[in-house]
Amino acid sequence: METTPEKLKEDIVQIIKAGLVTMISGAPGIGKSDVVMAIGKRFRLKIIDVRLAQCDPTEINGFPVLVDDRMDYAPPKQFPLEIDSVPSGYEGFLLFLDEFSSAPMAVQSAAYKLVLDRRIGDYQLHSKTAIICAGNDITHGAVANRLSTAMQSRLIHMNLVVNSEDWLAWAATNKIDYRITSFIEFRPEVLHKFDPDHNDQTFACPRTWEFANKLIDGVSNLKDHSHLLAGTLSEGVAREFIAYTEMMTSLPNINQIIKDPKNLPIDNDPALLYAVSHMVSAKIDDTNIEPLMDYLERLPIEFMTISVKAAIKRNADIFDLPRIKSWMNKLADEIFT
Image 1 (cartoon, one colour):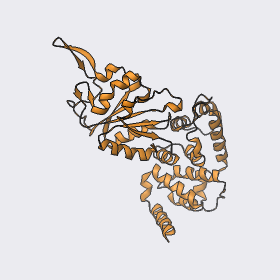
Image 2: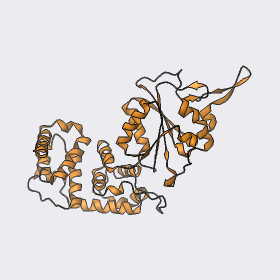
Image 3: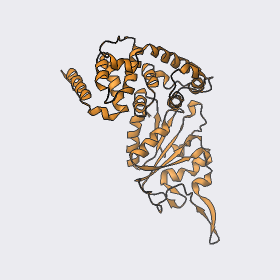
Image 4: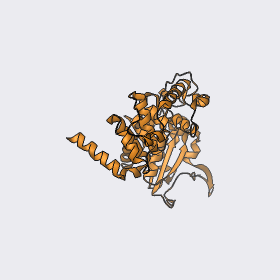
């Protein structure tokens, strides 16, 4: 079943409440781990990240030990058992079995009891433990094995796909550079430009765009960093992104907008409108709200909406400013009258 990140989060909650286990599949770098981390944070669950591809069967079943002249199995300490206490500040545990589809069949077989019966050998997992599995799909050229039919039937399968709207909402709350968000809004298809048979050394995906964001922090002239961006996003996407940012130099800067918001010329080129709306969204706050809103109200309504929505996601405090509330009420009146 294909799903987007935000929908997947709600589906996982329902699956966990039913006492079942989710298997998240999808292409590399699209945010499978981020979905799991968000679930853990939302419900205050201590995340235990187990890379199944790096495990040995004894790490799942327990290590053989001698007890009273008979062999027993000592459970790995990383798994929360019923005898363990929930750490202070948490409500339970989230056992994240990552790289699941990359695990050898022997390790997958060892995980049968863990996934279905929630047991490590003879030991029961803690009752407040949720389990989520994740792995790459074999069709995406990653190191992956087909799950056995016995394992398939133990899991609820969800296929994560990239959704630019979800990603842009995440990007706004995580302070991703406005040059990146405006480019993705303008060209959403380059958020995830993946071909399993590609000849580049890398490809554009949510993970590599996040890397690019770190690389350009504080950098104004991206052309001098073209080799770094090419090594992050692929040469083609990097070249296109840099060309887009060079085009943005024709825009007025934020100080010019604040100084003369009602008279500055506005270019109706969609690429420039995306760029300026994201630039303003990244800079707006309670000290400049009036002139910047004066300027935004001169843009086509869809671009002003993009800017205000992104600004609120970046800084929730501005939602309560009178100018924002006034504009939202005006917009609602226009929609419903």
